[in-house]
Length: 326
Image 1 (cartoon, one colour):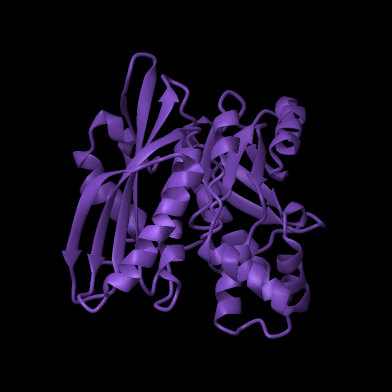
Image 2 (cartoon, helix red, strand yellow):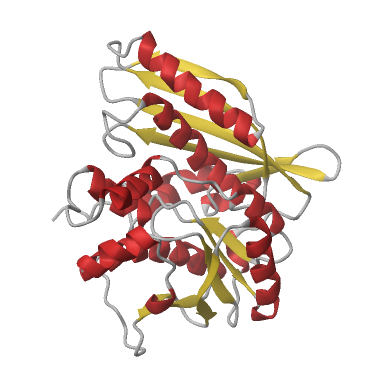
């Protein structure tokens, strides 16, 4: 009988974690941290997006570029880092002409201006397969202040920024799977899928407040599970507290099973963090100052894993806790 196929994180633990330098944090935090100028450290992050997996073949090239850059900046935000620059690798089919590249470069330029970063180098190759794009992003934090995944403790509150489920619902809207929604709601959700918002300002201001933090890329339950696993704790999420956009709420009201999108679907790129309940007023004030919603959605407890409870305190079973590549 064949051995069960290893999942994404099991592959990392078995084949790559033994190769990691101390700066790689055991390959459990999605970034590396190396020494920088006096008093600072650099946060290093690389992420790839693939046509047909992370974006659709007919997505506008400028928005593909922006999504590529933003998913990496979101990871820097999840450590409380300020972006410095990035390296870019493109693997493109030969039939992608200069018109596509021109629009792609315009998207990069637009976000470089918005986020105050520049391209520092990279590579470009041809491929017979789908478009594959990768960015290595560089951020900077004061020495010892990066917010890692391993700081969650029983008694902490669990918070999340923005709204959840929009990206997954946006993909459904693009595919014509939400016909009962208004055109305006479908457009809003589609944009949330194509153009995530890295919460850089919020992440930097949460340094010293958040004890464990990361961005939501694989889905709320899966990513909170990552924090729990590394921190050696469990967590409870109260489904009634999940922050939903008006468009997301409309979609879920029409089809309640879509609540799973807010719990387990990826691509939201919001910040997920734990903190002492005593700092909740500071979190609320920061949310108001920056104009970014932050919602308390649960708590950290002793144990392991993530439990999701409904309004009556009953467990909500999840058939799929989040996105996995393998």
